Image (cartoon, rainbow, N blue to C red):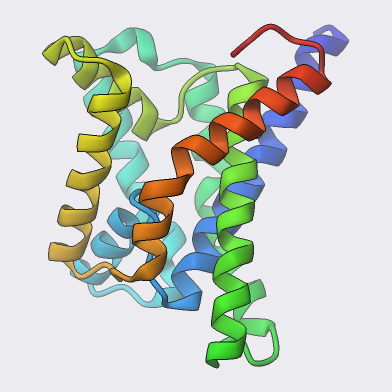
Length: 207
């Protein structure tokens, strides 16, 4: 394996760590989950799992999505997909443990900065994973499958998909709140901005 491939793997793994930690921080701050995190939280709630078992719920969701994508759009399942899901659940659990270990984490003065950090980690992590360009995570893979089936632009499908995730997660018992709305409105533009900056920094042409 050459240095370029190793660099991509390191960047992708670092991104996954930030994404999982960001999702965990948002969930633990209890001000609302992002559109993907609310599905994880909803499944956790519906399965009567504790807040400390959010990582287990996310693993189940991701594995189910990979199976669905494999049958409906096999080309979107690759090594990058498995690199994403294998450490993800453990990272989410660790991120939740770190947040709960922080002083004043469950007071409003701790929740607001905790959620802000969670969003920052989430956006930066996704941008790093995109920049690594080693494949798609399960949720993005499903969006691509739907896009292919309905023949609409990615941005339109993504907005509809995120809305569906919020509705589904909320119905299942996931935490809906101000962070849900903020991430739904800001995630796309911020992640695109960060990814473009990272790609320029690394002198790549993947936009």
